[in-house]
Amino acid sequence: MKIWILTGLVFVLSSFAASQTKPGTAPPTPRATVPSHVEDLLEANVKAEWDAFKNKDKKAYADLLAEDFIAVEDDGQGMRKKSTAVEEVDRSVVNKYYLVALKVLPVGADAALVTYELTIEFPPKAPVRIKRVLVSELWLKREGKWKLRYYQETRAR
Image 1 (cartoon, rainbow, N blue to C red):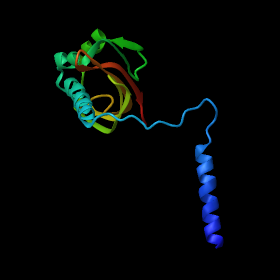
Image 2 (tube, helix red, strand yellow; image 1 turned 180 degrees about the vertical axis):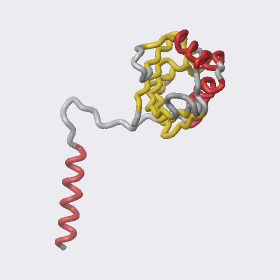
Image 3 (cartoon, rainbow, N blue to C red; image 1 turned 30 degrees about the vertical axis):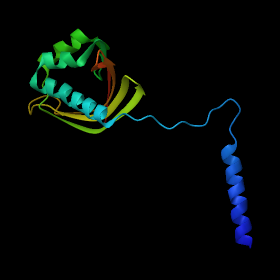
């Protein structure tokens, strides 16, 4: 009998606590998700971005970027516009790259935040052989195509 009373009391208190919200607050809403085809597309775009650097393909890289693209890299040189970022492709010395922990977070119907960890391998005689960065990118769907609008990297140790 005590078990039934205790179980009933727990149920009533749980129900009461769940129904209590602070005035003026809405109950939590389910987290939005990105359709899997959009996740796959954005992951492919990120790989195409790094393949363009590896292969020194300025056109492929430029095609991924929005006209108002801005990048902030870990080199302390400040923000770069699209034209400056595209010119960097010529000076690229990316031998290989490794993407891990790529995640896509929706921020609207036509916008997504993509985060990932990137390890870049440079040529054997380069002053720096390996660089690891954490990357955040804002992708926007414009005129039916996903374009990279903002790139931010932070060096990881």
